[in-house]
Image 1 (tube, rainbow, N blue to C red):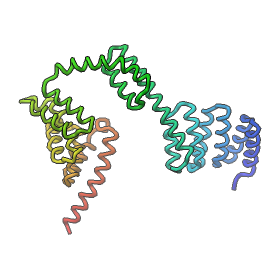
Image 2: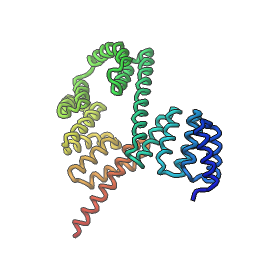
Image 3: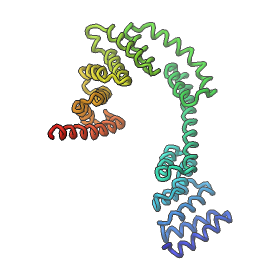
Image 4: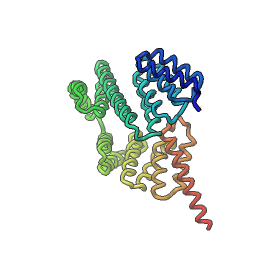
Length: 324
């Protein structure tokens, strides 16, 4: 049962709100929450008042209390996201919207705001990239500026500011690249061609280039940094075309030189799983999980953790089947 006096305060607050007396309404809603803070509508109405007087910090606080009172009260998420957007906490806003959508995935208001905020984030990132590229150009870092503008173009192709900067930067970058490539050895050139093919998802062509790179190396160079990179990249290509034996062979060659190469261990584990050598896959995954977390990284750690559970179940099932 609602608290009778709290409901009276709510009614008085609603009357003040309709009359445009938002500060007075806030006091009434505060009085209501002092008697019963478990009713989300009191907090939600208070948040609406704070929005009217553009006190977005007050709105944020009231909205959080609204959600605390009832985590299924969707309007609380909308109000909190509105406050965070106004405070330019776009990352927090997106998290709030996603939390609300996890409860009610079809909510049109939350979906619309999420789309708007993602667009704002994209636009802000483009502005930051352009500013960074300008700074890099001024500091003589043409290569860095070119890479930054490429990132900006992926977010907003055709943006006039990006294109304007690119017309200044690209000719200088191309000249620098031509001079740099003129100094590369044959194997180094093949490795770079392989990288270009890989980026275009032309994996078989990339494999050919990495193979030419490796074939061109002799003696101690076969364990050089260039060789390790070519082997690692070729293993990635083999994995993409489901040549798991090739993936295992190249990853093993990398691991002979760099036993704690996380990417090679994970890639080989995935390839072992692909050819149903589950125990070997599980061993590689356990090796990664035994390494320092900072060295492995969250994404790789989470992936290996999932693989470990899946592979352990499979290995145990195979043991049970063989014992029958």
